[in-house]
Amino acid sequence: MKIIKKIGTKWTVVLLIVAVLAGCTLFDLIYAQSYELSYTYTAKEGYLSADSKNTVTIEVTLTRNGKPVSGHLLWMDSPTMILDGERVSGGDLKVNQVATDENGKAEYTYYPYTANPKFKPAGVVDFSVRDLDSSIIVEIYVQEKFSLDLRTGED
Image (cartoon, rainbow, N blue to C red; front, side, top):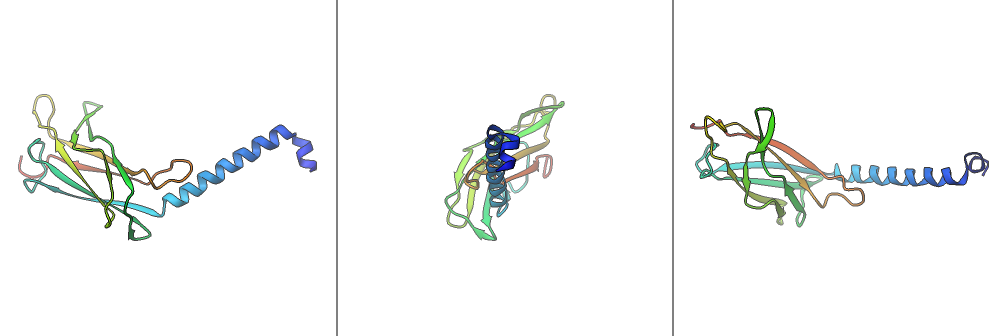
């Protein structure tokens, strides 16, 4: 009680609120770390290329402690690439949000941009996917970032 009188009731309440928020954040951080995202991809033509007709199927798998997680919503940001120091569109996704199936898998269809040597050459496209249901209190999500090099394969 002496410590409360010393620092005052107002500051005690502020410190308690900060402690509760820190505890909630720590809980969500530990909880989110029990999840893992991984990905694989398959190109329609068998190789990656900057051609909108060569669609790419990206399969994302969500596991928790090594076991598949079903029914979680996964969000994939629109693909981007860096061109002349600026982040620009790297193509399109059919949908950005997909729920995982009973095997913990979510499938995205990616339509690469069509390369133009003068204006937008083939390059590396960046992706980011996160599990929107891996957080309980403070919105700390498990996230996976990866890149696909559209210069590979038969140019």
